[in-house]
Image 1 (spheres, helix red, strand yellow):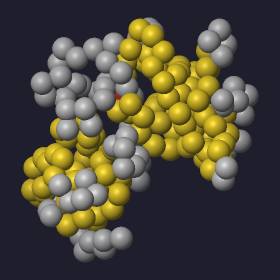
Image 2 (tube, one colour):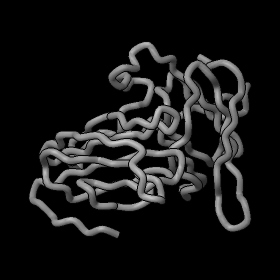
Image 3 (tube, one colour):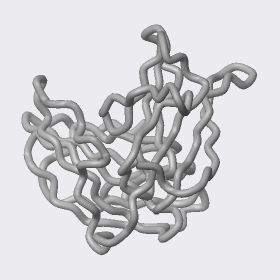
Image 4 (cartoon, one colour):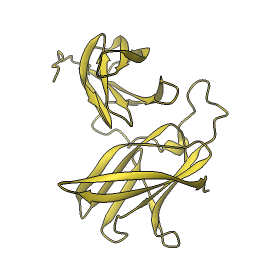
Length: 203
């Protein structure tokens, strides 16, 4: 793990990815992002964010300006191999939860890109809790699933818990104009989520 110097007004950069990649900040690898990597204690200012393959090849890069005590959330689109900004949040103890994915403005060049929807199965409607981008989902009794609509592609951050115990936290793909069903499963020694395309977007 890379230890970065602490600053009085330290900032953070988060990078979400749906496949394992290496994330580097200012040419220094900070870890592997299979879901979301959070680089803390950054000096405010200009930073270069790189997504690399395990062989060291640069897949995408983006230079961003990070303000004082600010968290910048980025996502890597594995299809177009581009990085884009999701949102910026103040780093305070009283920060509001992350903005729902459906309320986020589209990234530059994506103004006309269709949204997508997501259904989560395998999680109890009684003791379970599901959220996307920090926004709580409702259980749809007709579909027998937790539903999220109006999601911005290519990825969203999914959080699943049951009886207060974390089952899954990570990034999942969103299909533009389509609907995906993700099933929570216990495999061997760990909980995991498997997703599949499941028709047109639901609203």
